[in-house]
Amino acid sequence: MDSQNGWSTRELAELVGTTMKTVRYYHRIGLLAEPDRGVNGYKRYRVTHLIRLLRIRRLVDLGVALADIPALDESKEGAERILRARDAELAASIERQQRMRADLAGSLRHLDPAELPSALRESPTDLSGLHRMFALLGSRIHDPWVTDLLRGLLATPRTDVGKEFDALTEEASDQVRQDLAERYAPELTREQRSEPRLMDPAEREAAGGDPRNWSLFLKGVPELYNPAQIDVLQRINAILRKRTDAASHECSDSSEPELRREPDSGPIR
Image 1 (cartoon, rainbow, N blue to C red):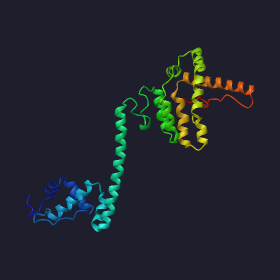
Image 2: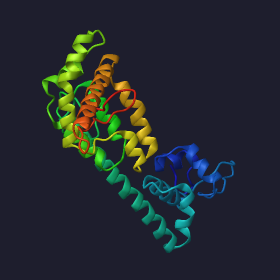
Image 3: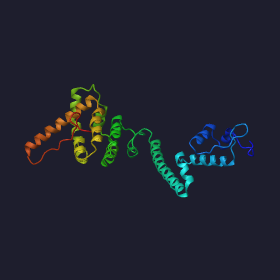
Image 4: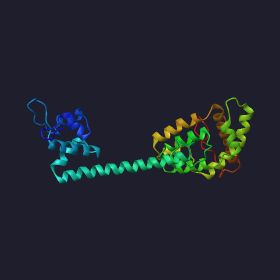
């Protein structure tokens, strides 16, 4: 390479560590001036072209858009504005990546529930598939109370009757379903009393929750259960309704609270 006689396009590209196609593209969009040509008709680049191309490539490496480079050449004020904007973009990107790394660190510590949102990842690692789906679906709802509620529900060890419900198959007999409903009803009633925010999603929507999110919940939750489980939930609602009606006959000013339920699937659990 002879700098006295100038460099060819290929030689200039090699010096800078780019390609001939890139150099020609910079010519086409006006970022790099065309050089004079030698007696043979070929372009001969000088040191000024080399410095300019090095500057362009440096700015590109910093993430500056090609369209912004001319403004950097016009004034110090324009250069400062563009570079500060780029710095702010990088700061936001670093913050986002740090959050991603924190989530990944949680996933590495808890490989089983890695798909759970980070706020719920400290839940027991032996979550059933049903509860994992419930957590993922619930975390999509951005009402402030949902994450805390789910964390509490998922961190509470499942009772024996709760595990029976999780393991219930469609082949369960009518007697097995009724027996499970009788034993599970008191437990679900206690859960609702201890967590009054666990109300029917339709009421949440009416109270101002995002209707799109709650519509997702209403449509999705029933699909988390098989037909036998839905049948048990409906039996539980029938049991609780019967108890409520009986209590209302005995005392008109008090009644047994009925477990909130979704019309087709029974109480949400």
